Image (tube, rainbow, N blue to C red):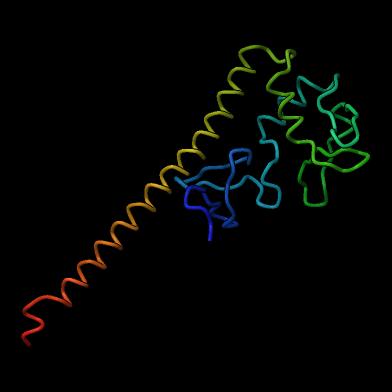
Length: 162
C-alpha cells in the first residue's frame, strides 16, 4: 500500500517524489517520463544547451570525474535524452540540475525564474501530498462515522423489538 502523503502518477501509478520531473494536465499530476522520473524538463535542457555547452556541468561521484555537456548527453533508442557518466554509466541528472541552478553563466533573471519554476513544481507535489493526506483522514473519519451508524442501527431499540 502506498503512503497516503504521496502523490501518485496518473500514468504509471507510482509515487511522485519532490525530485521527479512532473507534468500536470487537466488537474492531474504525472511523471514527465515514467520510465525515468528524474529527467530534465524541456526548459532545463534548453538552458543547459544554450548556456552551458562550453564548461563542465556535472561531476560523477563514483568516478570522481567532471564532465562537459557533450561528454554526458545522449539520446537512447526511445528518443529519451539522458545524462550519464561515460565511464560508469551513473545517472548524472541531479548533478546537471544542481549545476544549472547555480551556474553564473545563465543571466540572473533566467536563473531566478528557472529556480522559481522548479520550486513551484516541487510545491505542487508537496501540496498534493498534503491534500492526499487530508483526504485520507477525512475518508477514515467518514468510514468510522458510517461504521458507528451501522452499529447504532443494529443496536437500536426498534430493531430489537421486531
